[in-house]
Length: 336
Image (cartoon, rainbow, N blue to C red; front, side, top):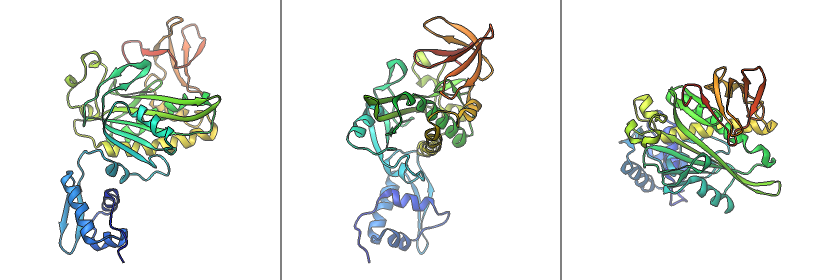
């Protein structure tokens, strides 16, 4: 008996993706307890959005090709995580997904909720730097976390996300992504992603943490970047030579982050992630310049410690543990 009048597009997409062959209209009706007319309407809506769906009499429907579209339905239909992405807030355009995430967190959004935007026009980077972002070319997402640990542990979440993004890009694109400590994601010596973590604290209690990610995905040409960053920035499309499906990459980021976050909270440090992080660390065992306001110095990067600090062996043999804060690290001969 049909008891529902509505069906979510994400449900249809998820079921079509889970089958290599055709899914009959009857299967969809029975699975979601809706009429054939309701199924037909959703299929047509998906076609209008650019999904290529074959409709064959006596066989049913088959998803042939997915466009690079971002929507709540597209993202949620791909997710198999337990808590990361448990709620998806999608916006065509916004000022900053971090600002939106803070508002949703204060309004009661769950731990693991994600804010995704196709266009961001007031994004903020490290030290408050601003930039504008064109539509259809990047991933702008922020995950909301409501942990029960002390605020002094939260800074390490930026490195947890950096590891997650690097792993996701490498897996989804076959490009070798690396990390420029602490949280710049780099492909072929140019930056493709920045990460910004912020939190709201009352006394020694974290109300929420938001970790925002901006990934240059489908920017087609270097000339599309602002002149001041053109020499140090790139996109996955430029490096790969083909379009990348953004929703598929979001799914991979959330999958990696859920796994890495769960590892982190077991010890509340990076001991369980240090070895993997160092595998992605571009400057590992290489000479670096530490731009410390107290005085610049050079040394060899020896990886991170359990707190996420960069271990630098100085020329005189002494070892410094560099805390991110206002300190920057550069390669001796350039950005990396």
